Image (cartoon, rainbow, N blue to C red):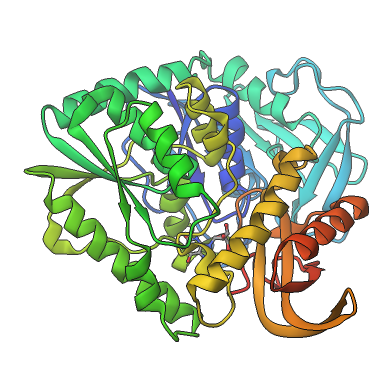
Length: 509
Ligand code: XMP
């Protein structure tokens, strides 16, 4: 049985980050909403209570029955979680008069406490709370304060119940990961054996059991998630996995051929479907971004359906769903739940009656990449930037034509290849180019030109939910701009997008 840590989510924007840190320490964990707690079996080694946008003082503040877990295994409360532990034991938590956002330095660390083993005085931690624990009753020990507050870390005397008012999961808490490791290993006794190899072995065994001799259909996109899902399922059931890779005519330059070749090289049973014209027909004269998305989604489903019918007796649909796709929908309150609704192109029609198999649904993106690496998948696929399902259609503002796609493919290729050649590709979370519905005047040779404007977009981000524009070197941008204007007929002006998300989005449509 895989040992695990349960994280109870009270709606903090950082809950997923706690889970990622735990996973990075090779311990499996699951996030569950505080109001839908799973049955705890012997595999549970400890519990973490997350932060929250709520205050424990609010009347309808989230609450849990501590009787379900206290005394059964160790508990660590983070921020709101810590305040909840203190509050339920009758201690006063109230709005703070000092500023408790941002950086603070630990002071008065009790070095013999396992939670803080190896942490030095003055270690920087990150605070983000409006309430503070005023003081603690005798059955608690304060195990550290900070330069500004009395209670930064505490322990319930003689019990494995701990609280941290700061956020150990954010990188600004310099020794935060060590503190989490102290909890996982020193206190919960986790073995830290949840490695990529372990994940692959157990997942493949489970898939074999689940799928038996059944046939599975899976839509490949060229992206990391669907590729890793395919290779895992392929390891379990071999040629009974039938992959479909659709050329919608909206992919990057040469992508269809190159990616199809590398899939075949991996031994996958894959059918490439050249369907560009169907997509162009459906997009004809369509200017509205959402209607473009819908049109693409519909044609995709039709094409996929047509191809699937050729796989006799298929019972399952394989999908590259990852953990954030699932947990986003159960967050309690607050900002983490809102933005992403439109992002997974086209569910499949119900009449297909396929059961869904999602081998990556417990992983974060970085975990998927690690598994992909351990599976020996080409770095070219694993390290790929995210790319929207509707592809270049939502980067061509206004109506889409094959001619515009051809121009954008050339421009995009110069930009992306430039990033790779200059060692910048992996520093950027996602990059691409927008073809604007704007002509501008230029001069080439002695000729006046009146041609297209393109906007380069490159962002840094962790998950696409928020993003900042990448500070690419001026000389690099100058070189790319020259190359584009000199080589791509139809473009005479290049601009660089310097908007962050929010308030802008990554894509322009
Ligand atoms: P935005 O533009 O909303 O994008 O900041 C966030 C992330 O989602 C991708 N994106 C999409 N992905 N279908 C997709 O599969 C879509 O319709 C879609 N729209 C945006 C975007 O590329 C970025 O990674």
